Image (cartoon, rainbow, N blue to C red):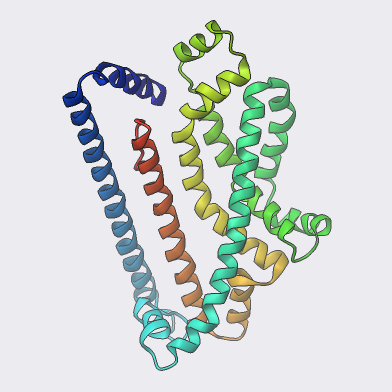
Length: 296
C-alpha cells in the first residue's frame, strides 16, 4: 500500500512542478494533513492517559486493597509534587528514572540496529534468513529469565553489554518483522526501473526498498519504545540492580509502597510520552517526504 502511495505522490510532484498554483495547493494540503495527523496523535495520547488514570483509580478503589499498600493517582501526586517532602522524594526517584531511561536507550539503539541489519541481510540472502531466523524465533520462545544467567555470564553482571543484549532480545522479533515487511513491499515498477538502468540489488535496496520501508521502520520504532523500557527494567532486575527495575523489589521488601507506586507511575508516563513522540516524528518525516502517515 505504501509504495502505491509513494508512486502517486511522485506522479503528483511531476504534474504540478510547472504550475506554481497547483504546487502551493499541494503544499497546503500536506500541511493540513500533517496538522490533522498531529492533532489526532495528541488526542490519542490524552485519551490513553485519561483511561490509564481511570483504570488505576478503579483498581485502587474497587479491589479492596489496603490504602497502606495501594496508592492512587492523588497519593502519587502528593508524594511527588505537593507533599512536604516532595522534593526529597523526587531527588530519590528521578535519578532512578534517568538510569532506566539510559538503559532503555542502550537497548533501543542496539536492538533497532540489529533488527535493520538483519532485515537487510535477510532481504539480500535467503540463505542468511534460513540460517538466522530460527535462532531469532528460538530467542522469542525461550523465557528470558531462563537465559538471563547465561547472558550475564557471557557479558558480565551489571555491564552495559548485558543491558543491550537483554533489551534487544525483548523486542527484536517484532521490530525485525516490521522492517522485513516494509522491505518486501517495494514497488515492482520502481525496482524494474533500477534494473533497466543497470542498478544491482544494493542499488535497489538503497534507492527503493529502504525509502519505501520508512513507514514500517517507524512502526518498528513505536513498538520498540515500550519494549525497550521493559527490557531495561528486566536487565536492571536481573543484572545491574540499578534504576527503577533494580529498586522495585527493594521498595516492596522495605514496605516503601509510595516509592513503589510512584516509580511505576513515572516510568509508565514517560513511556507513553516517548511512544507518542516517536509517532509525531513519524508523521512529520513521512509528511515531508510525501508518504502516508500512520496514526496507529
